[in-house]
Length: 85
Image (cartoon, rainbow, N blue to C red; front, side):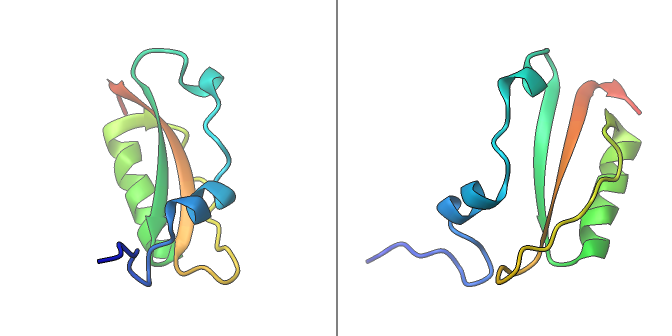
């Protein structure tokens, strides 16, 4: 049986084409992470970024993108998982 992505989830090649590649210089230091967020709407993505900001030192609530023809929204957050907010 052929594996298929659900209709509401882009394939990995679609995500790779939309999101900028993670540059090694962004994660060169220990405990830094890059989180690519996919949500159903802007409010959901912003709520998640706000929750992450309360837990860790993050790049803050960033812009949310909606890609034409793709369901949902996307955002990117940089976080230091060992440094509390």
